[in-house]
Amino acid sequence: MTLRDLIRDYMLIPGLAGHEDRIRARIKADLDALGIAHRTDRLGNLSATLEGDPAAPAVLVFTHMDQLGFILRKIEASGLIRLERLGGVPERALAAQAVVICTRVGDVPGVIANKSHHATTPEEKYRVLPYAELYVDAGFTSKAEAEAAGLRIGDPVVYRPHVMDLANGRLAGTSADDRAGCAALVDLAARLKDRRSGPTVHLVWSVQEEYNLRGVLPAAAAAKPDIAFQIDLLLACDTPDMQSRGEVTLGGGPGISLYSFHGRGTLNGVIPHPALVALMEEAAQAEGLPLQRSAHTGALTDLSYIQFMGEEGVACLDVGFPMRYTHSALEVVDPADVAQMVALLQSAIARITPGFNLIR
Image 1 (tube, one colour):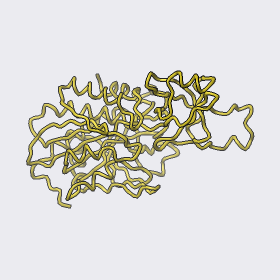
Image 2: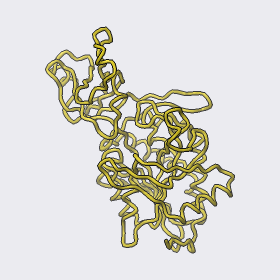
Image 3: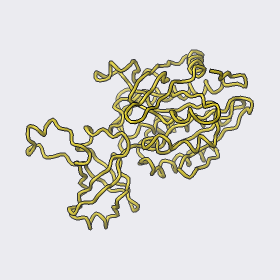
Image 4: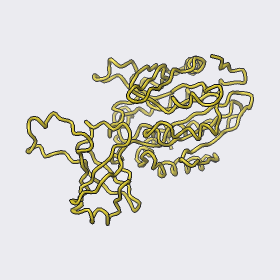
């Protein structure tokens, strides 16, 4: 199976934060097919270790399995459903979206209602409804009917899984953030499993990144890494609405984050370790790969918390692939960027030797 096909498959598997069972089961099966042993902790993080030179710095490479979405909050007497938002869901992109309610007995389709245009007042036409005012219509005519179909408060709800093939091999669909990263990490595992040299590499597919950014911490604590690379999206800035934000372009290859910060209720971010920046620059040059550079505010990854672990901290760097329309129901990614990112990581990891200097 090609990396592109793996990305497509993963994007079609529901896995709300805290409810990653299905995507974890699929990744486990793919690791089993590769003959790579794995383990799962109490939070649900999936980990694998590829042993290497104990004298070299230990490396953690991780990405998150979960996706953003909703929790079923209330079933109205009419059978209509109210949702609680989970993660950074953009309210202005919600009306008229198809969703899936993942119940214990099966998936139930529904649609986030959008008031009939013929009854919309001039004032309402330009108003974005807060999520608390939105409701899902799954076709039920009563609360009892919905409950008989298996719906319960607390059920996970996600955008209806969907993938579209665009021109130039690009993909649009649900949860490319970060199922493209999950596929990349499986591909990296396949490339590294039979190597004959290099550092010990811990691979983690983490949970609850979209919820609180800290789900990975038990797996990272168990790994005790010296170096951590996090795989996630980079904001593509090549559309009219994003051009002032940076220079990352879709199809321009992998990149690294030189600065990230999130100030909306969470004062954290990553200023990467300079030795890792230099490592990626050298690996990209040696392999003839592009290396884009990103610096932005308004986003955060779980790497932000790993950097503070242990007595000396962890040398950290966000490595990513460009993505358009993040956190919407139809994100856009170029699998060629993801493939080049895997090659970049493979080359960079091979360059981490016992003498690799992490002194700041």
